[in-house]
Length: 329
Image 1: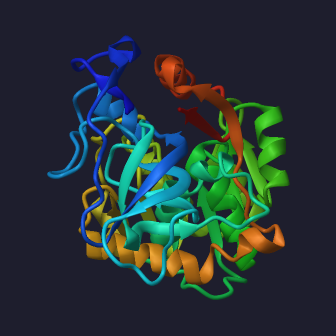
Image 2: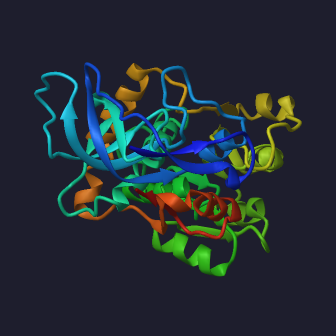
Image 3: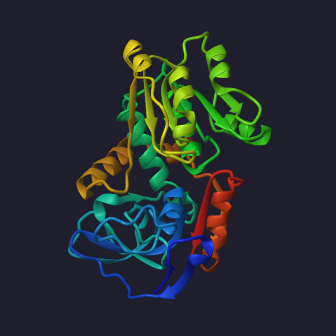
């Protein structure tokens, strides 16, 4: 099969399509013919040599994909050849074929474009597990909760806004430019702050009557740490899932203690198969059904052929795409 390999750590020019051995599904796995793979910032970090795949994962990038089951690793009651699936994986999505543990599969509804579905697994699982886990919103209605999502125009942000709106939470977000903030409001944001011209702490405090938010879902990292604490309500939770603008910052422990704040962070890729299966099962039970009533949909900004993988990475790095970039074999 064809797959995108990283020749050596570096820029997008280090991505090249090569012929590699076809994967074989093992026990408890299926083989998926890939329709598309989502491109995530974690893939860029892997390309640069900063985020190696966990043991046992393919060396080529790709943490999510969609496609059709073409073979089974053993006798399975719940999956069959021909099933349309979306997959959360530890690597290997940038390829024509992908072996996936069955616990990391989600069924793609018939009405949903199979290619576009590739933009959902990583984003939905990341957003949902963090909002309902360390964010402590729970899986039920979240009316009365106030949440700030940074990077509302990104792959995770566009999904998080929809999930929170479906739960009934009050949602604020940050994005760059009036066009992008307007599109964030269309996805469910009650307040969309243009970070290029506005201060999100001031805007959120004013919109909440000075109270602040219960949860901040942050992809920015160090550069926003101090202001994220300022925008939290007492007993608020800061959940860091990305470090786009730095891994290091000074933390005022006095403010954390006095206001009973929680600062935490997670990654998804390095978790065990059992942990990922539990997250996928929770998503399938509570969030995935919103695809059927329109409360959740993939937001795709660009479709790029597999042979043009460097361009896909350049698009993500540029920050100009609204939603997800997909690679198509």
